[in-house]
Length: 267
Image 1: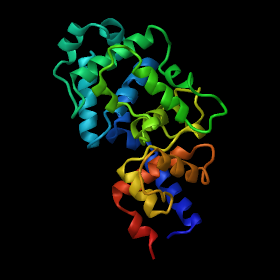
Image 2 (image 1 turned 45 degrees about the vertical axis):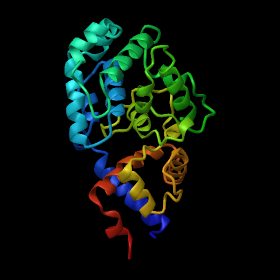
Image 3 (image 1 turned 90 degrees about the vertical axis):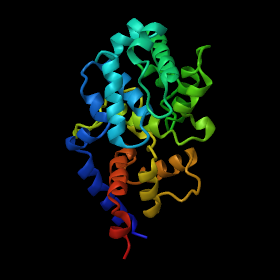
């Protein structure tokens, strides 16, 4: 097992390697960077993050199809057509991604339409459930899930696309979305658009690459890969950067993708 110093050196090295503008082109966050309007950005970021399972190239392709179906103006499309079944079917009726179907699409649009009629930014859907005293975003994730499915027409099947810690889920996609929207640095990848959530409250998005790397480095010991594992890993990463632990998402993901851990950390 590598020493604590060796682990931090490795993480910092791969953070610097992957937290770069070149990362954007091959990652779904690149679709978000194509927009300048803050509402368009947060809509695209949320939706693309919710689609983020499978190959990144496929996620990008499906995200681009979704954006095109909304005429390249997500916020305007939602406000004009978000509660109109005929408009939704005409524009996006044939669009789907794996188990995400037109039923899920219609509810996402209707909920966003409902929400933006009452609020300026999607950030409020999370921050209204969070206080400065909260150590992590867990209350925000729980509250958002309840709010998102609060409309009477919410389909039961759509619940599988928006996770919650209440079910012990890793909430990987929501954690990634919030990382995109909250983190701010000089690297040009994460957006730093929202200020109501602190970077030290964010939790690490744990996918298969992050999990494998974290276990190999001794950063994650919990057998189940659930919400408690997310908290364990995030807490461990705060030992290296208490104010911005999720910056190491770049490192853990990159190391996992390149399969370098066992080769470079065992001796």
